[in-house]
Length: 89
Image: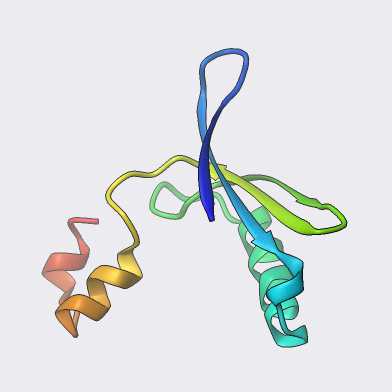
């Protein structure tokens, strides 16, 4: 689940909430890898991870707010993503 959050200065963020109870061990390993990789990256075409929190029931990932939906969903819907279309994202 992703929620919009606004800090005290009016900046918008996306907060992804991942429920621990539904994750397999492999899911947790994948999520930790994703967090580790995103912490290291700084590129205008890759979403920025500002922070991640490990709480008893959930993981919280605070990222840059993006609009337009999931790129993965668009690729699945079209069955292919050609380079000239990918450049638009």
